[in-house]
Image 1 (cartoon, one colour):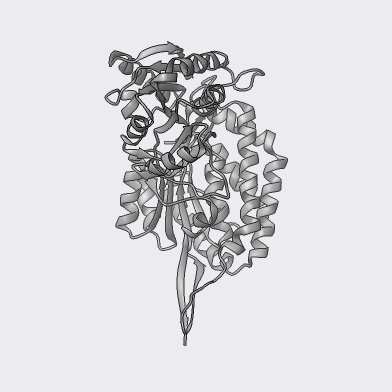
Image 2: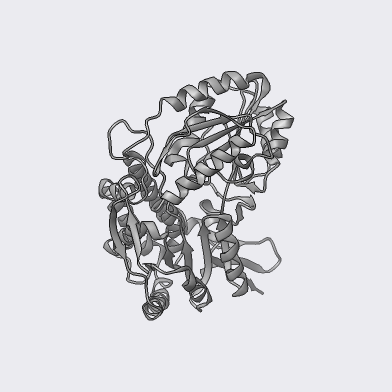
Length: 450
């Protein structure tokens, strides 16, 4: 069966992509093995030169690549172009910092002792459609700057993006086999993980996909990093700047049509200011224009696939049956789902318990800040959270109590090349970005010289 790129807004088929046969896949794996033998011998300077060229190519082609993203998965064009620019920035960051991050580490012993970092081989990546360039360059830039090679299984609906990234690597002068995209079926995944050249597996995706792939990685004793689902808490306390909090709440929930693991999903608001915050939140959601992502003045495009829109509609319907109140939105036509807000959600509601992947914001009312922290932590996911309060010292104390891999105070939750990012609980394990991220797929070797 071929993979199809389908424009989510028009439902037109843009392209069809052949799935690799097992023989073709084996050729790709063999090329990866050959490429690694040479690539691991290159210097940081040589790698950085190509990585800088890649960053420049991405910037030069950002409009063309942004249009490709929008056509394949539906986000508004300005967001797509920003994604390409952010991806280019990550290439620059690791080109400039990889050598420093991976320098030898010495220990205070009576003999000479140190840790050195060696590339491990091929990193096999399974990446999602929601940020089809950023998710790939987020792991690939550090992995390749460290001397590894990579094999990418991208989501079936964004194979055009996968091919464009591979072409950009080749245009930047990376040898064939250093970065390869492999359009394969789920049934072929284990055969890739089992190969001798693959020593690391990274997946960004659903809890179910992560559980399955992590099991395969464990079976074949391969290091893995999992960035999975999220149901991020956005906590608004009595002394918060409500105008700013509502503005960022709208951005955090509705960016990319709400299709991000780190979108705020559970808006936990103290009772004293709940009505005032919800009024502001409603006003800002109503001002959004949903529609054709290529049209001027549109803030939000369609969901990426029909099945995703149908699932969200079912979750909304059930949440209202369970006692939630619809404040604004709720209408859907094909993949076009209007920005939606519901109030009076509790911990027994489907909108609280499940990850809501789309433009549906849920408000949970808390008695006070301690109740808000308890509600935030009452979830199997622990990716990120935000706290809104003018008391910075109290925010620090509360942030330390939140069970999540990332906590932001008075700010939009986002990833940054300089800062490690990842989740706990069912949101996964391991870290991407920062110095810790580049070391996830390195062999740390201890050297002792007497």
